[in-house]
Amino acid sequence: MTIIRNQSLNHSISSSDQLARKQIEKQRMRDVQLLLLNLSENEEATIKLILDSLYDIGAVNFINQRFRYRPFNRVLKSIARMSKPVFKIYAWHWFKKNCPQLIANWLYTQVAFENPIAVAQEIAVEASTIQQPQLLPAENAMLEVKALRHQIRWLSCITIVSLSTLGIVIATWNRNPPRLLQSSPQYQSSICR
Image (cartoon, rainbow, N blue to C red; front, side):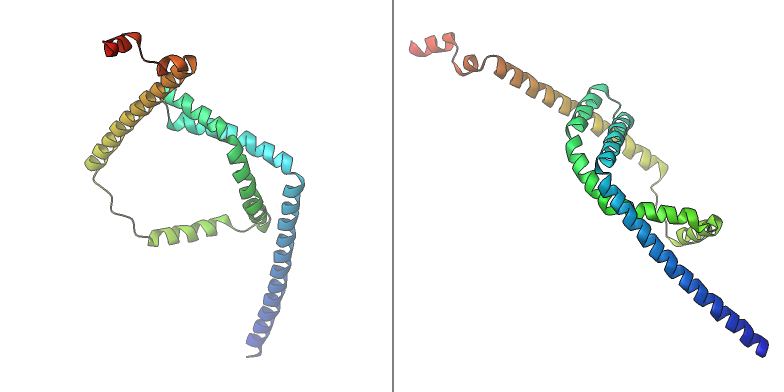
């Protein structure tokens, strides 16, 4: 019976040591997060340049991957260049709000030296308890994909024609605005008779 008490005593001592160690770890990670926040405030210009470069690369790659039709691709790239200042504002606010915590968490996983296999097993167990949604039969899915592709082609064509027409109207209007407002001479002569 005394052996059990000694083991429980050793266990309580080790658990209090672990608790103290965990408290120290939490405090140190809060310090790391504050230092990262301070670093992001001091290096605002550098971070904005990094976000700017990432946007340039990401926008072009995303557009090239998703929109292969060349005229539509070019239009979207020009829109992406015009929307870059808005992205920089939102990206900077998102970075200040989220990145110090994300980086601190990542750094903690690097120094924790936990067994990654145990974490993967826990995730696998949790994923297996989720019920899978009912899948459509393969034929219905293929028909749906074909119908959506057809709709995308039509919408792309309509968008291109609309934008082209708008461009032609604006170019014509900028070239001769007074002439368009005046009536043609043949029409005026027929009215006078």
